[in-house]
Amino acid sequence: MNDWNVEPLGEDALLVRFGDRIDIAVNRQVHRVAAAIEARRPTWLLDLVPAYATLALFVDRAAFPAGVDPLREAERWLRQGFGEGFGLNDADDVAPGRLVEIPVRYGGDDGPDLEAVALHAGLSIREVVARHVAAEYRVAMLGFAAGFPYLLGMDRTLSMPRLETPRVRVAAGSVGIGGAQTGIYPRQGPGGWRIIGRTAVGLFDPVRTPPTLLAPGDRVRLIATDDMPAP
Amino acid sequence: MSVRVLAPGLLTTLQDGGRTGFRHLGVGTAGALDAYSHAVANLLVGNAPATPVLEITLGGPRLHFDRAARIALCGADIDAHADAGADTQSLPGWRRIDIPSGCDVTLGACRRGARAYLAVAGGFAAPRILDSGSTDLRAAFGGVRGRAIATGDVLPIARSSIPARGTIGIAPWWIDPAPDLDFGTTIVVRALPGRDALLRDGALCAGAWRIDAASNRQGLRLQGEALALADPRERISEPVAPGTIQLPADGQPIVLLADAQTHGGYARIGHVIAADRPRLAQLRAGDGLRFEPCTPETARRLANEQQQRLARIAMAIAARK
Image (cartoon, rainbow over all chains, first blue to last red; front, top):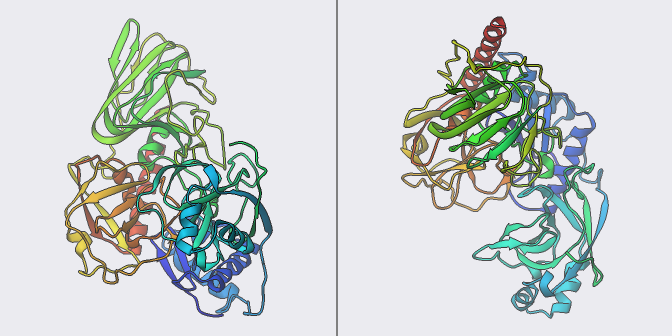
């Protein structure tokens, strides 16, 4: 897959673009390229930020002499080091990501929207849970909040638009559905996704190394459980 | 030595140069919104430019210093005075100020601008979490337990060797923040093009914008004649940065600031250049804002010139010792 180009994100970052849709194959390419860049990370690279179909390289402008365009240098580095195909073939599946299992208690107070999702999908509650835990998810990116994983790979029948009016308070660990995606709120706060369950596993702890449970590109399996410590 | 908080002010947080290296985990920059004033305040008291300071929003705190200290106030023009018992003085900004032990410093309202920076020699000792002492209000960590300072907090000072003194001393010289800051009622910032074109080319820079009251450290919400995109399709979330100008469906732009989230799904119609971001930090609800187009070459030159001015200020201050 050789389809990528670059564009500036202001003066701070170079954005490498692989597409403009949410697509698991495109997102996998983002993570493979991120891993390849990470493996020979230049000192001027401050942040390497994957998203669904783009990858941002935040550059340290102060690391370049005056008169040199840091973003042009970053682009040159990319093209020289990786060529047009980043040295990857479609058949390669480097960096498949770790597999992380997360126990989730579905329904009840932990999942106030589970019934609405079942009604919307025309499925029983049991079937919604079965389909939600059946998938192997991919962490497309962490964003919205520190440690919040956007998970790709949900059974499409479970898709449901976000709430018209977001909740003021969503409990920490809440598992939600937003459109065709699913995700987990690391901490209590406002949120518009349909909440179907909750996990007691901590997704973000700034004094832990690493601070997030999940990394971009990781694979995730959700395990239905009734056994969970109180919030 | 330490500083005790007698009253916290509206939103006073510990901030340093901000956090890098964790955007891929959804952790934003945080840090002083007005990096220029933050740096000058630190230089005035002999600190490295990125040392933690108190960022004061609109209305300031009341603080008790248990030892003699050297302090400086930069950024917004703020009502301030020091009370050392027998000696009481009002405190001007952009100067080196020495206060005796047991002194109360009261910061009032910002007269012009929105954010003032209080630096103390030695620096506030913020715990370094994810490589920075800055308060991340959204993720609730850093600074003082991830929140604004509160009455009763004791803020330790990292190290200080200011000799004891009986009175308040204010240096007769000061730093002029022009041209880096502008406290006019309508300010102008320069912007690089964004990815997404507007229906009417140049409409962003033609518009007269007002700062909405819903603005905060995440972003400035602007009010004006609604803008329309050339391509109004829904977009997927992509990385964003402080300075990014987003356009939601209502056509009223949002300029992202240091606490912005790391990814956004709104159209990106421009990016305020780094050299002009300190000005954004000083805008308050109701103020006017205009954009001027800029090129990457000009943005780079302006950023370099600002760094050169800071280097000259550092040398001039060092020569006063």
